[in-house]
Length: 293
Image (cartoon, rainbow, N blue to C red; front, side, top):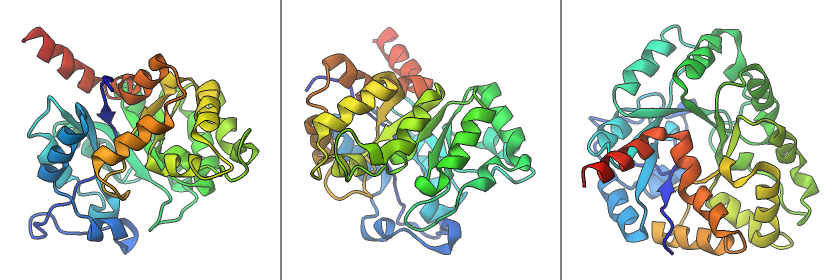
């Protein structure tokens, strides 16, 4: 495969717990971060073996809470290949100042953790009045906001999309839709309902591939439907490595297999084009490298 590949959902964990102490959101550390704690250096080895050109490193909230130090220290080692997607307490009085602090350290996107394996909230806190200043700031600086949630938080996501249409939102793991009925995927109706919002983007990860490969769902029918509903220019790939089992090379291979029925143009958009739109610093770094070659 010759497509450029950008990974917008890898995680890294440091072995140095004195410098980077654990402080997970909700007080519960994710299983994967304890079982498969890949360092930045190990991720670089994996990405090079997998043919990945660049990455938007996603800070692990279920390991470090709101302390983005390890991801930031790592990203800043190679700003030509990496940007950071960091977590901030958006209800805090100094939230905007904290965002600006982390922007100086490679932050290209904000991530909000509403619901997942260790935390389950309906996400109403993301749209509380005290957060409005952050959403307005995101619109002003044109920074993408990634939201991790399940179906429990989709009503809050919908309200955010309606209230702040100038902010680009990317939904991690597609919000974990229900694909158990197969095509035409009526059980995934909450996901199709949100397609009307032009500021909503979807992050396709191995969690999505696993669902699409479990009968009666099929990758060919599901991803064709996803592209038809959202357009490839609102879809982007992220590895979820190492939270998902397998090497990064194996996770990329799974993606190639699941995207096989899509057009070359759509595949290129999902593998890299949308990522460059969401995190333009990556495109700028590529253009600068080409200009200086």
